[in-house]
Image 1 (cartoon, chains in turn red, orange):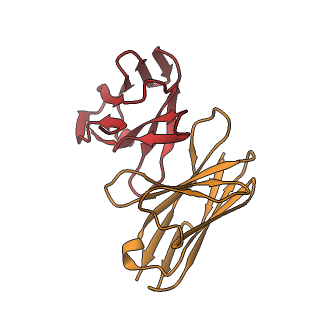
Image 2 (cartoon, rainbow over the protein chains, first blue to last red):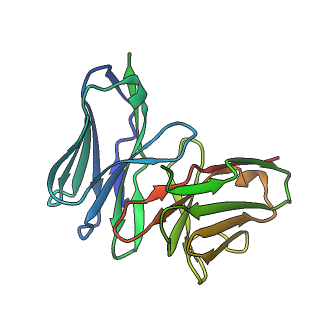
Length: 111
Length: 114
């Protein structure tokens, strides 16, 4: 079982729609979860971090965490073509003292 | 502003030569830096964890004698790809974590071995 599971996509949404990205993880003890965006040929950049159950909103982005289900998601409202990228889900394992990344979901926002 | 500075951003070298990549933590002292490699259309793969003042911890399958890591100060870690071969061509990315912070990535180094 992989530590982090993501649907690789590709996911396509029309401009202005809501994009929903999902992720499950294996480490029940993990307390820190992150979403990174990676444009083609670039390194990942942090867009959201979430540490407690529930929703966390930042502009057009909302991260949702459900530790009981070991599930974290990212919603992008009013999707823009500039949101087209690969989105990486990650968590930090205290036991392993390292980050685990999913394989990423490719998102395309169609103008 | 940038938290992590990585140089060079792009390098082309001949097979058999060595290449050094530098990773600097700009805003804080980093006792731990992580080195990742990413092949086209694949996920990030952790190569090694660089610890200041001690030997790096390498992931399974990563040759420590080929990928030399030096973390001599709290703000600088270097990765040297020795005797590079075309199959080493990849995108190498360093990252820094301090305390409970998320992982901050450098801009990456695109290595092409001809």
